[in-house]
Image (tube, rainbow, N blue to C red; front, side):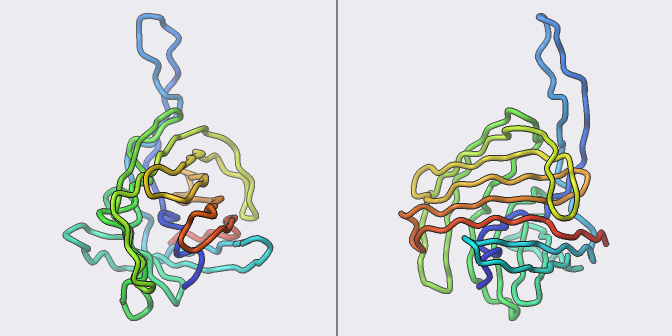
Length: 220
């Protein structure tokens, strides 16, 4: 199983972006300067190359958005493939649902999904996601996994593919969770351009740290 399949969860995050001015009036609520209103899936044929570094062990992966929206549990999906694995994402929200091998057999899955996005997105937003997780290949499963998410910023991020404006979203562990990390989602590109993922020593697969950056992006 490729490492990125375990952590990408939502690498394909396209959305429509609405920008409003911040309010300074004491009599009105503050309005987010940048707000992503809703998930809008990238088109079939979009390709992107990821540069992945797991504690000094480096590799690249090339992913392609498939022309396949076959529902999963009644939910329309967005599917991407690296030639060996298929990622299945909730087409309505962009949240990761499961990863399959090239024959369609489940490798890992989350129910109902990972919940790593809650629309609309803006700096300062927080939410809690609860999910069940199954590692089918290892015969392991957990219920009521809790993850806390926070949109910590909207900033320039530089990766091999270029410099992009991106939301920085941090996640920290709650109940039955042993992972932490940060993603940088670039609305103009419709993809996560950078990610840091860490498993703690309490994780069933042991400690690791994986850094992923966008090396190339080719829209469909």
